[in-house]
Length: 272
Image (cartoon, rainbow, N blue to C red; front, top):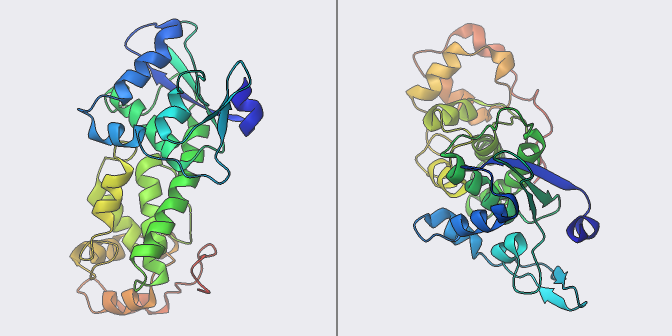
């Protein structure tokens, strides 16, 4: 239980294994993660972890062992078993215990590992996995916001918030975030279709960061259809420029002229 003492409480992610594996469950998961055929997993496994100070493991002899990449954090290195605990006491359910303050990439690795092992089925049915996805939501939302702040500096605050919200929802199925919802978030959901909780972080970022896409691109008929069909109270954090553009479309009616786009939750970009 050393990792729990080091990092605080654990987040538990259930993963359905092909069969009962007991003490070999973690080795099985490690081997799946290290398979070069799965490029997303393989890349995440060997992603460096940059922390200051670096979180080290401590061997039985008391020696500090640097944990400087995602694979070592999860599965360890000679002399230390890693910061993540995997238990498979009965049946085919492995309980993966992840320190709550683990870096983003560790959560993404376990998310991708679950997808790979379960064949893309995100929900484990008889075991609650909501805490994992709520925690994943927090770390993905922050990472997506940082990406937008860095790469889309000329985009409006509303669009950057919609991007972060949409990426986080795509991976977790959890809604909320920075302001919203907005017309662009609804359009993003349409583009991603039924891939919620079955898409990688890099895929979601690539699709939704397109300068000509539904978040950062021009208003299209797709946006206008949602504008026509969805009640205004369910779509209240729109960019004022988007509203002006929507009014030019064939689906706009004068009854919508009183629309107030400022009723959403606090937007962290608002005063930037």
